[in-house]
Length: 282
Image (tube, rainbow, N blue to C red; front, top):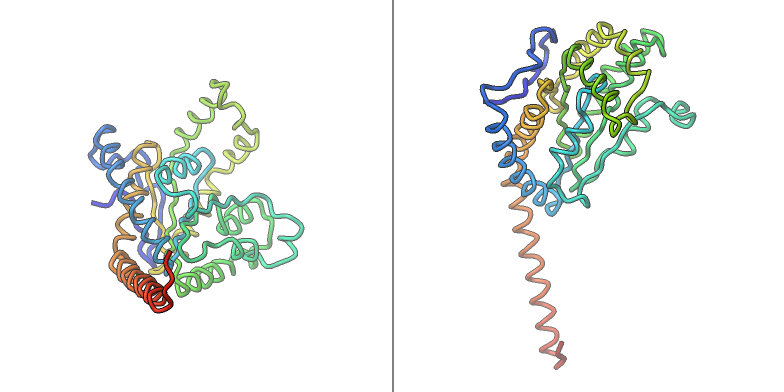
């Protein structure tokens, strides 16, 4: 059974209804073994995606501070060919970004055909942090839900497979992870007083996420809620969705690769025939 929760279009999300410590009835050892199997298959699927060049993938990762976005990228992408992967992170907008519409800086880094793209945070920050901190008037950020849906629909129509994951951790788990960073000298560089300040706005962020998940999960760009208190389960749940989704494109990619193979063989045969006709050898 799927371990990430699909947000069906038109449904109202209440995050308190989802258990952040869910384990799918698995222990860690079994979960990691299944993850390894999926990871190997994802590697093969990425190779076909890249070679066929008919689609791209955009994986969006969102979540509260310490929810594991970096860890998910590091683990789920571990076997993929770096030449076909592009990771983008979105920080505070620059002056140039602010001189354009809010999707400008996002659209220009969406993955091209054959590329597996990852957004570590994304255009959703403009209906999350912007909303929570009042960085834009309410009528402005409210209109952005429809803009986002239209943008993602455009990507899908252009051959991009859009999959969005909300890494759902509990407030207690976040506190524990923040304290762990203080204790480990090797992780102290991750510390930020801003993480603790943002934590004070936990309820406002949960409400903002609920609205984003409810209003922007569509057939062509679905949201998945990933229980993320257990890091191994988080990785498994994300990998499962990726593999299950990309399997549906495998026949198309293999068909495209068969056509490409036939074209390449025909080109090679024509070249060899030309050599024979002209008496040349290679």
